[in-house]
Length: 82
Image (tube, rainbow, N blue to C red; front, top):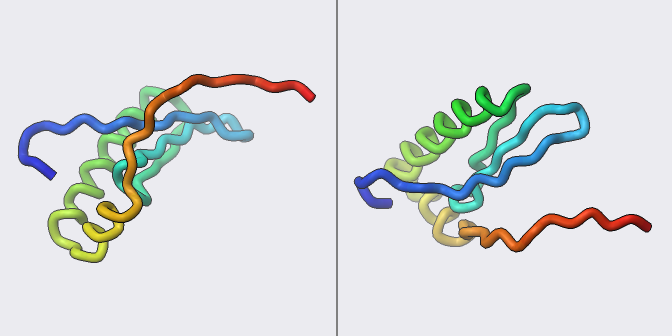
């Protein structure tokens, strides 16, 4: 990871209880949730910062990032009725 500011793609969803959930595919295990989108944005920044701190100090986590991380490419969203 470089020292310059980084950008991360974040997947945002809303669960069955109405909570917003964010995950960061390029940082395995990096996810959080909140009741509102503004709170979620704050929490996901904190989660990314924590994962980056762990990345700097934990060789096992670095291996996980190198093995499982991916950058999603958004294709679209569909609702299919059956």
